[in-house]
Length: 135
Image (cartoon, rainbow, N blue to C red; front, side):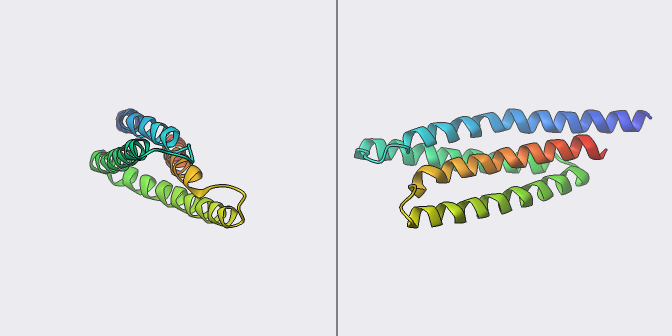
């Protein structure tokens, strides 16, 4: 009973740490999305958009690295499975967006970051729910 309570506390702390670490990623993603949403950008606006997107990618890598280092074997398994589900969703969404872009319905550069942010949200929610309901 005590061991189960201790495992629950470890899992709760890992979820909380991933959520807190993920806040800068989501924030930078929304900033990069807002900066890149204008189709007619000046050189300065493009530079800010590229910088925000680069910061978004680096913080995402940082969060992933920290999450895997903190996790035990069971949580790593759940994180990898959740990332696989999110990766599949992102691949399908990017393929659909590419088809819609080639048909002239949408512009791909406007949806790409939104799809990646959505993929991260799917990863977090899936990992959180699997951790909560599988212990």
